[in-house]
Amino acid sequence: MSKMVRITAVLGDYYHPAESIKESLENALQTIKDLQLKFCTYEQLEDELSTQPDAVILFKEDRLNPTEEKATHWMTEELALQINRYVSNGGGWLAWHSGLASYSPESAYTQMLKGYFLHHPEKHQMVQYTSVPGNEINTNPIAFEFMDEHYFVHCEEESTGVFLISDSIDGHAPAGWSHHFGEGRVCCLTPAHNKEGLLNPEFLCLLGNCVSWITA
Image (tube, rainbow, N blue to C red; front, side, top):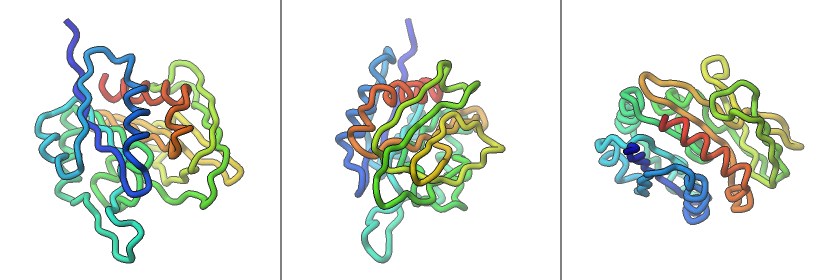
């Protein structure tokens, strides 16, 4: 009998409605057998970590009220350290799109990711995504493009493995990287913002590969 794969997902924020993200994730995970996918809020995450799921997927920025002058942040350093312990003890973590955004660069969470969001152009452009040869996420070359919010990031490329790069009229940036963290695995993925990108078949294949890797 195959082992049940238990995944917890925290999806959606002010700029990213959860509905399309959920649809994308559910489509990407159709090939994983014996899957238990549970959605929770950021307030429930601490309790969910104590149940030791196989992986956590975070698509949510740290700011709860990004349009206000004084932003409220939900990721405490205590929770960041708990996340680090969870992954170090064998958990998997996928920081997807806004799961990289507005978290403090000094946070234990951001240090675990080995990268974070810097900025994106105001106007969406056509973004080309291309896999990097010889990585653990994609056994076959991947290339796709769609109109997207092009994320530019800080990435510690010397201490992680970049498996996806992005290019647009605005420039070039890492778009996916992965590494081991203690006994666990961390994966970071910057696309996608719009429903068009979230449901792109090639992207869904890549997203499924990322989740398979962090739960391996």
